[in-house]
Image (cartoon, rainbow, N blue to C red):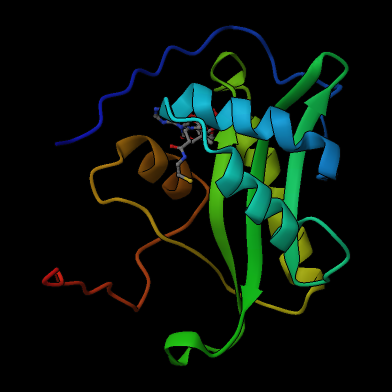
Length: 161
Ligand SMILES: CC(C)(COP(=O)(O)OP(=O)(O)OC[C@H]1O[C@@H](n2cnc3c(N)ncnc32)[C@H](O)[C@@H]1OP(=O)(O)O)[C@@H](O)C(=O)NCCC(=O)NCCS
């Protein structure tokens, strides 16, 4: 079933005091809350493991957050992956989320743009992601940023118990 969403743009301009920075271990609880607000499921163990993987000094793994003085507005997670599926090194975006009251103010675009800057600095020239075909919101978002269908398709099958 297609996800429904509403585009109700407020007249507020993009807040000028938003900054994008690398996530810190102390951001974990806010990321868990932000994700739970959107998905309805709190996944502290999952995000703890993602923080262990992405938050640190590795030059090919990125966990960025958008914040202003009142607190965190959103996050994005990405990584440079090489040679899986026969693909040369490319930047993969695995997750993005902007708090519901901060949406449609360009925060998601800022996070995406900063991730692309980090990918370029890491030496890759291609950015990829994967999404559910019926997720119109995410599809609109990534298409608006210039992403298009790529050369790979995903295959799957169920496994007998
Ligand atoms: C997708 C998401 C990150 C966008 O964040 P955002 O800060 O609102 O995005 P922006 O304001 O930068 O929007 C950029 C463009 O995306 C498109 N877009 C964003 N929200 C949209 C909506 N509700 N309807 C249609 N297009 C939309 C528009 O083209 C927009 O440009 P415009 O405002 O000039 O028309 C945010 O809606 C979100 O967190 N959604 C849930 C996340 C999710 O489902 N994650 C699961 C996959 S990891």
